[in-house]
Length: 167
Ligand code: S3P
Image (tube, rainbow, N blue to C red; front, side, top):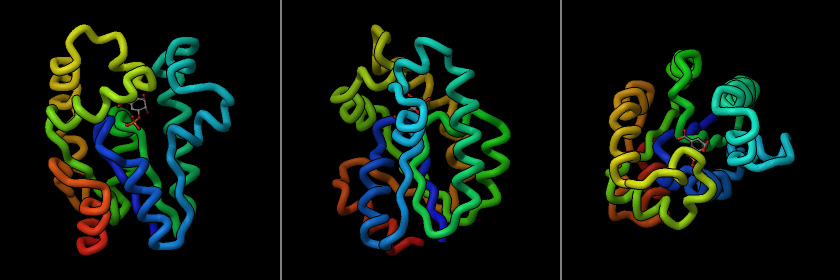
């Protein structure tokens, strides 16, 4: 069993993944946290110092490594689908869950931790930046998802239980 959570920043992939892993009693890896742990610096620092492309390579390498494991729940970063190769790999999986949220929900959720998001923290109009990025990415998330969970107006427990009845 391998569950992969995908979706935009601020859709709860990390908290939901952690909860699911506790319920299912399997390993949990949050990709951003894992990259920070291995590199010993924050995602923001990696973006600033080495650029986005460097980060995307680290992300792709980690994804490949994690998909060799079984009994694992993986929370991906929101940009995992910006790499074509990742889309192809993820299409072969059978439990890719897309946490689907509208712009309003995302703005509300990311506002709490904006400094952790290099792609958003410099934005002068958060609403617009998110809208543009999301419309670029939306179809890609949908294309590789085996399950789509609408998270708007739902709390973590509700999202988790909807996943558990769906998969
Ligand atoms: C990114 C999302 C972030 C992190 C990085 C880039 C993106 O992860 O990987 O800041 O391109 O959407 P979260 O979705 O966990 O915030």
